[in-house]
Length: 260
Length: 265
Image (cartoon, rainbow over all chains, first blue to last red; front, side):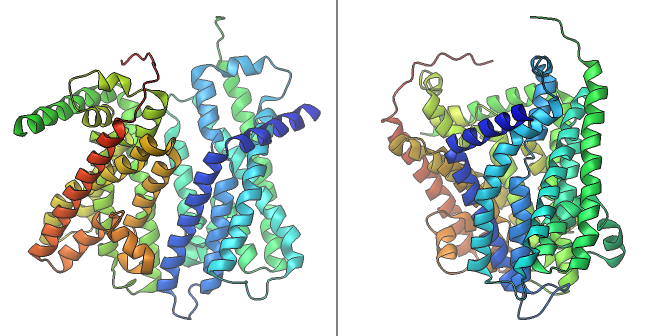
């Protein structure tokens, strides 16, 4: 456990060194929220749409973007690169579990991003929309659990997709499709905007549980909803970890090391 | 002057042919990336379709077809910019690493030579997506005419904005983050209805950073054509291209070589 914590610690230090890249992402986060604020302000005229008020909608976008900016999707590119370049051969020699080492490494930068973007999300939510009516601070621990599960689930799914490089020469279509499913089924719009028959299916799928799950919890919290969503997120989270381990353990058998 | 322009157009065409043949050598990878980018853009079309369907009304005077026209022009314009001038977004990096040396030694204009030396694969997905989108929305004749004109003005403006932003590196040190942010701004602001932007933001995108002329002004021309507005579109595009060119060339005088040895393959 100690070695994984050390890796996470080094990763946090690295994130602090590359401040310029964080600044760029912060600016982009701001622009994105600003554009959506302008769009939703134009659309709403004191009414509710699909059960969401303007305030809830702006907070919703702030929260889904928070998940996206912190979820370490870069792991797909890293896995892809390590497998295709053969760099993975060097890593396999080290005394660690490869999957958990990668998680520990990304954990540092994800923790750093989470702290920066949580402040941004809350700040922009208050500036653009004001407080959420009826928000109960007692719900924060459950919301945090939901966010952590979302981010972890997304990380291991992206990792599994990256590890498909063991099997496919060109694995980016899987990632493209996955990303777009996240986009359209929860990130840009709550699933309540979609036809009713799709909502019944989407609320059980990981794409919506990653973005819509925690964001909906922030804007319209209820214990019934939290106790319905969190166990599903936990189950998908376990499944995504097992999936990454499975894809890795089968794929690594295909590695041929020729020295050098 | 005319000969100079002709020579540089030939150079751009040579780079285009060479880069395209290099990319198509890895056919599967090329097709996957093109398809991936088209899919990426299509997800936004889905977003707008759901939104308009749910609202059952326009947004700030814009209908679904109008927004898709913005997307088509932005996508194909952006694609053309990155098919022909993909290095425009790497100018800061080239200045910082000293990579510009290679282009300075060659008997062609360093700006044109350096920015057209690379082609983006995914940009082909953007080019195709815009055209397919126009066909899918059953665009009117006027829309097709304006699309045909504005994809070129859009490509020139997007390239010029990138060149201007990154040229600041000559003057103030590493401005890569500024150039990249400006690029993000350009894309983000050009794919949403003009009417959602107000006050200083609207003034900014219609003047100092003329993002509004990439898609919003062409749509105005579709809705209410006037020769004056069309001339304004051409005027602003050429003026901004000239401004970016001068900014780069003046900045180039401040460039210091890093003695970097590179191999171009």
